Image 1 (cartoon, rainbow, N blue to C red):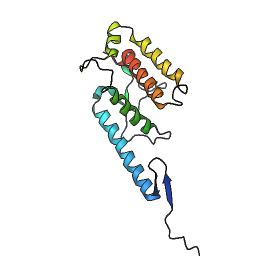
Image 2 (cartoon, one colour):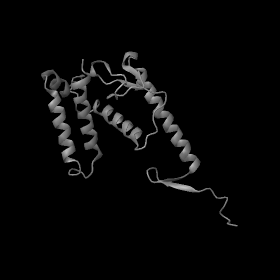
Image 3 (cartoon, helix red, strand yellow):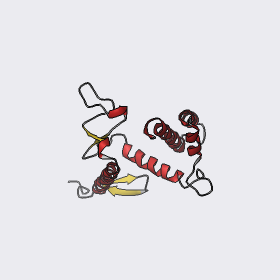
Image 4 (cartoon, rainbow, N blue to C red):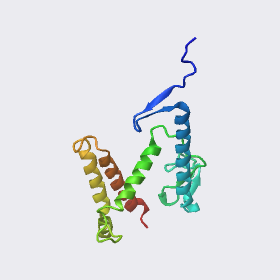
Length: 169
């Protein structure tokens, strides 16, 4: 009989530089899933009921409900999906990145006006946001290696383009 049969197997967590048990990994994963689910519920709670559709898609198949005015509708779910490609982590990182832009150099003279507001006021910000996103994607891998910040910046500009093209009232 193996004398190590009662020894709990531990796994090395490179990110935190520690060894953890399978039970700790499962507990952390469950806590993170709950955190993401709570965040999803919080986001959905701020969406008007008229913008929620059960069992609908943005590009519905024939016979499925079509969003009004071609505006994307948020699909109401009681539980967020099981993320296969770490989308929950990416969304969290993107949200943290976006929050940081409100504290940085984008605001002028400690007011709420950003350069983006001026571009939007000019009425042709969509192409500016698209082209700036393209710039960050184009330089990805060429400045500071495979710099995650370049992707975050591109996503930010794509979200701003999405705002002016589809969400701005």
